[in-house]
Length: 59
Image (tube, rainbow, N blue to C red; front, side, top):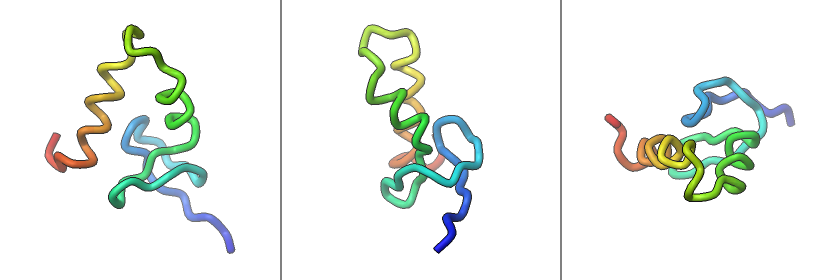
């Protein structure tokens, strides 16, 4: 079975590998970057904002 490309809610790129959370897709690269990002990292608030899009469809 071939994987279908989906648009990542974090990087907005079409990817085939990743995870789905509440019907929203996060590519494998973004998932790994988020998991390995320290809360003190300057990119952390960006990830929080993007993850809110899962629950707040208009964010």
